[in-house]
Image (cartoon, rainbow, N blue to C red; front, top):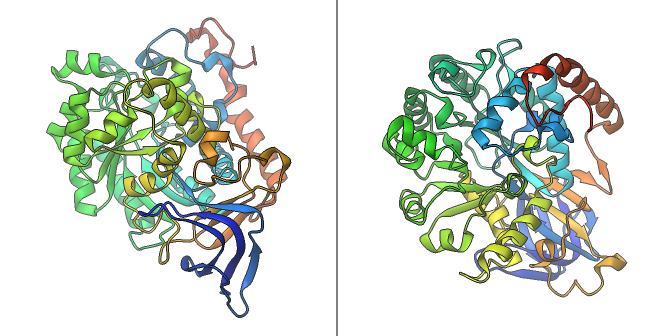
Length: 474
């Protein structure tokens, strides 16, 4: 494979420990890794990519998503009504149970493409939707999609094991047993988990959420993860604590800590119910948190206190969350939203993070969360995961003096100029490199219609989303 040389980039924002920004510099890439960064680099027979007038950033790392929800976007009827998250889940699962194998494949392609076009190079997805009406090899379909696009993919194999009659929100069609869930986790780990540097696929054991699973599901998940050397993930602190106290006499974090579902190999999503004392507990154990600003804003939930969490020593990263509570897979948009939320929430109390601080949460923070010391920053020896933003446009006038703070501060949230993953260009000049986008769009829309929209009307009478018909746009 020929080397690649990015020449004369206007700025390279490294996000390294010294927060270095290289101006008018080059990046030499051999195979998947960066081998040199500096001025006037040369390499015989290298493929040259012009960096003229462009800012280069480390690839963003998405640490929480639900790709399958891409097929319920822009349906106002599934918006949060004035109910709790738990009540909303009770209703939305009536739609989720219709998901098919093809819907998983095409919704994953759709979400991953959106992520790539907006600078994301490594994505985690929490796939907990396994209806008993379709093939159980749904993560395999996601791996197929990731391989086609060339994105780095960490698959969270989720599950819900507690039946409705015991207090969960899960329809019978989506229930799994703990043994069945863990057996499939083992199968996926054996097939896809690659712990080597520059790996393109890993598996994370990810029971969906404590309120919808047996205690044994979480205990056995932690034991299997430590035995196999993989990571753990779940939802936590998003409105379930009152129910957990009623059921177990303790808050969710205490419950997870007591079961061993915490530690430096574990991270949670959301956390807007966490208390300051719980920040310290998580920091002490090394447990991380994926901040997902879009669903918090959409649902009107509390804004997390990032400065206080950082002061306590918590590990933080950034996630899109599922499209049922976001409607996009644009992590640049989530970066901008997270920054503005912190300005509103924290400035008068603890001081808000800078736009660059938020960028590091979305890059270095995400890589650390998923145990990827080979990702997250642009440094010699690390993976060539990066994206470029074209600054040769009139709307960029007056912004080009500060590349480190540019993205979140000025709202650079559109398609990037180029995305490179593992040393290979996968998106450039508005075009996905490895696919026929128009063909896949038609196939994806058909899969969406076949699996969701055309089958939804039969369920209208059982859903109460403010009386709305979710087969229409109004």
